[in-house]
Amino acid sequence: MKEIEALWSEVRDLSLGNSSRVERLESPPTPLQFLRDFVSPNKPCLISNAINHWPALSSWTHHSYLTRLLSSSSVSLHLTPNGRADALVVHHASLCFASAHVERVPFPEALSLISSGSRDSPSNLRFVAYAQQQNDCFRSEYSALAADCDPHIPWATHALGCVPEAVNLWIGNQYSQTSFHKDHYENLYAVVTGEKHFLLLPPTDVHRMYIRDYPAANYRYSWDTGEFSLELEKPTRHVPWCSVNPYPSPENKEAEMSKFPLYFNGPEPVQCTVKAGEILYL
Amino acid sequence: MKEIEALWSEVRDLSLGNSSRVERLESPPTPLQFLRDFVSPNKPCLISNAINHWPALSSWTHHSYLTRLLSSSSVSLHLTPNGRADALVVHHASLCFASAHVERVPFPEALSLISSGSRDSPSNLRFVAYAQQQNDCFRSEYSALAADCDPHIPWATHALGCVPEAVNLWIGNQYSQTSFHKDHYENLYAVVTGEKHFLLLPPTDVHRMYIRDYPAANYRYSWDTGEFSLELEKPTRHVPWCSVNPYPSPENKEAEMSKFPLYFNGPEPVQCTVKAGEILYL
Image 1 (cartoon, rainbow over the protein chains, first blue to last red):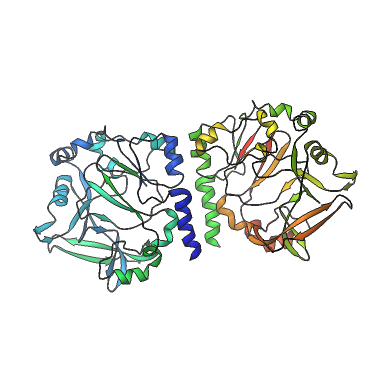
Image 2 (cartoon, each protein chain N blue to C red; image 1 turned 90 degrees about the vertical axis):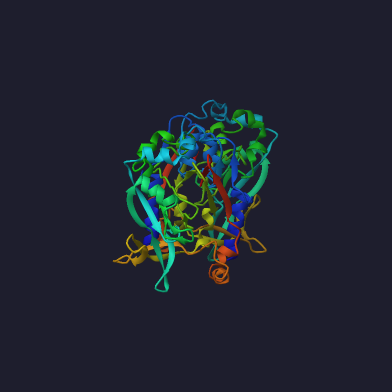
């Protein structure tokens, strides 16, 4: 335990720095600077003024623009009861890894469900809709928008020595949430409209996430009844996922803290908000 | 065990490549190429034509040149019975980590002991002398030679974002040997005269080295008797060192193979010879 604590502290002293903030660049780095100062030491950074020239920054704020260009496109829409897709959920008294109900719907309908269709009355959330599919969807489902962004980020492509393996687009609302997870990819996350909050841990803190195997399950949404069901996959498939919910509800907090002491008693993760026009490297 | 074997194989498939040879560059890389293709993936490379302009390449082949410039310098000379300094040695029936007898001697004398003074008859090796001290010795003990080499390797300095922490010089003979060890530094090893043979394992193979703690001991050489003694340090100090001798003598080979199966049954380490004028990045 002492050794693990020493590791947390050393990686912050030697490499990441002890700041509770993500380093911010006011303009794009050179490929060498990006690779040397961020990619190699596994250090996130927030980059402003790197995508100002993307037409998307202005045109995507107009729903009418998007529905016009994507009028004949179907996109993958993820539906969950609460916005937490790919997350741990209690099912028959034990935890499972629940994936969203996924449906291809015409883009205009998807956008309307994301922005307002999720309520049947102001107080009643029917579901949370989140347009996403992490299969390079921007270059497939959303290819009609290709001209609105650069096809790649040149300084990153030079630094990493390859064009992006996948370019994904997420369109969500204030309920959209991605659960705490680990990911071995090099990611550049550009926000076009709105903002996204991240909570980050360095790779050396992986033990603090308590990655465990959970049985995979899938939400099914019935448009008739307006109800979700949750079914375990048959045959059983296990998904390794982070056990920690970094924002436990007040009544669960004590129990969670005693179950996951490495997380709750270790150094604070770094919080970071990416605003429209910014890129987060992580 | 299966998981470890999968790791050995994956790191070779995904990152290092499965070649039994170190990649060779015929000219110095750009800083970006060096960082991206070698430093980041922890991949060694041999670089030719990077130091052709160093005056050292021609002038250091003449002993008279070296003894003239260093006529008034004292240098650290390491003496061992067999050329194996900083190596495991059997002492009172158990292994210890034996460091050389170190003495500061005038450079001309050191050079003469390295090149010929180690024999008292053609068949009798008195000791092996090796001029080295890994404390930035090139910029201290050998500062008279500073003008013969560049003070740093520009493409590496740019890639790594800093000038060398230490610049060391080794002057040895055919018996000089460095025992199998691990090292977390980024190293650029330039050979000026002669050649050096390396045996390399990637960082992910560290378990194959069986790093264990051994009590530190020091050789003492008596110029009067011409004998070495070996004494354990008091108070006892333990040094973590690699247990594996990659070149066991034929009569020990079977015993060594059964003691260190991860080493002897795993993928072959990469052999590499660095010749005068070449740099090995490792």
